[in-house]
Length: 488
Image 1: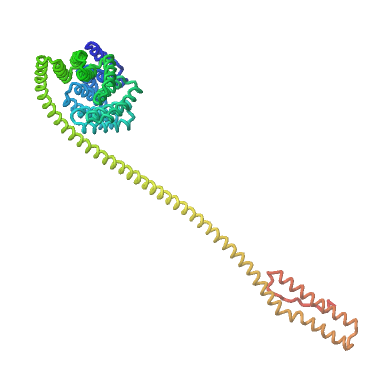
Image 2 (image 1 turned 90 degrees about the vertical axis):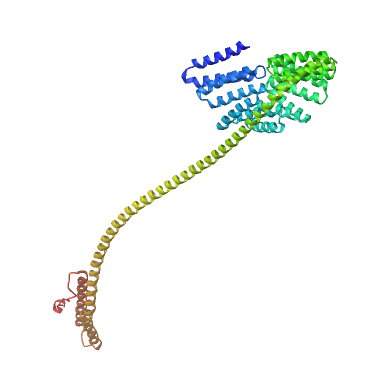
């Protein structure tokens, strides 16, 4: 056995040294994981070896600065100390491990450590143990850690058994067994069978209890779970003594002492010595019983001192642990506040940036608009100048047209003033001729000639007026002299 685990450590360390540099983290991580897995697998077989493997894993993780691996290695060392009944040493490691897992915000790691701490209090402070198991179960359910959920149900069941709440204990053991069977975790199944057997014994269902315990012992031997074999034998011894099967009881005690020594568990050894006392007392072999009683008394005296010392150490470590938890809680709260402040600062900065961007865009847009307005104003000014020129042109044209109209008006005025003089004369002549004709004072031929002259004169004057009106350069309506003789 020693050679096997020495080789595991040697080849693990060797492999970590020869991996290429670019794969160093992966190689180291695998090596540490293998060491911790081996430490966990032999926790019930050889706790001292479990501690050594955990320490080797811790050395590698510490050199590389892998925080998660450091925390897990500390947890493995703590489990080893717990199985050696060194609860104060276990709590120190659990405390350090939990602090690192909290810093990493590793829910799975925290859940496992809380379960381990619950195990420390499981036998001495049921309420405290149950509190830690419930914290562990809550985290395990959140992280969907089925193996830990099964283990936590198992531990909660053990506490209910200690509190004589056997139905609740059986219910939790069944939940645990169902999960371990599904996951094919043999050690978990064995522990469930063992604890169910203990509960059925307490319920005085001896046949069912013996059946479960024998099955658990058989599987524990197959898997070299020394502590479990010893624990099962302790319960079987009690059953056999109560049922007067003293030969079976003696065999179970001897086998139990053997496996207790393999597991290096002094407490179990002491319990088997006490069972020897009970056995010899039932056989009425009082001399041998007295010898075993004296051994138990001596062990109890030493154990009492050790237990007191252990209890004081555990209380001290518990006080430190609680204080550390409070400090960690304060740190977490402070980190939450800092996170909120950081988020608020980021939001404010983002809003400020958006505001500045919007202002910049507004100023840019305004500048662009002003530029467009300036260009538009220039265009309007140009159009205004063009319009002014057009207006001036129109005014000039209007002036010219007005001038023509003024001239025409003047000429019309002249026409109107001369019309009576130039036209009335011939008309008056014609009127006189008409009177002469009426009175028969002029013959017809002469009358016709004279009327013709008048008509020609009127025609000439009208032609003259039209010529003047259409000739703007003419100064006025100056009638031509009509030669009456020529007309005649």
